[in-house]
Image 1 (spheres, rainbow, N blue to C red):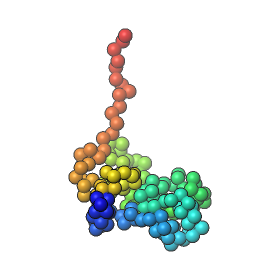
Image 2: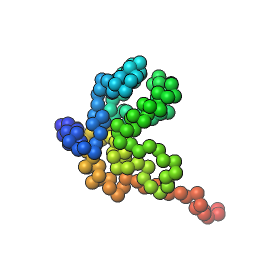
Image 3: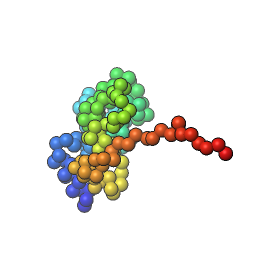
Amino acid sequence: MAAMTSTVEDLKNEQVPQCLYWTVDQVVDWIDNLGFPYYKACFATNMINGRKLVTIEAKALPSIGITDFEHIKIIAKSIRDMLNLEEPDWTRSISLPPRNDIGMYVERKSGTGKNIDSLTFNKFLQDFKDAKWRPPLANHCLILPRC
């Protein structure tokens, strides 16, 4: 029941992309409408729904059967645009979070489980406000005592 409530709350929130809650059939329809009807089977066979679509990057498309480089670029960009994900910025400082708030949320929502199913964007912003991004501490300069 909590999962249904969180879905309804997220679908009412304009910041949350609705495609996050698509079924496999809706993803297949989307790829068809994008102009690639011959890739419908690739998405259907691999059971790609809206939450799994979050994890599909350009490098993953060949593993599901999409090998044309121009098609890969178009599909990957369309996924990023739909999910409101930022395009990778290779000049970005490593001290900054890897994604914006919505990007961090859809990445977390791509998982499975009771806690993730009941998570909403508003709850994510509340619960993970300070803990969203903590870069790993480097200890490569740690001086260890001699034995």
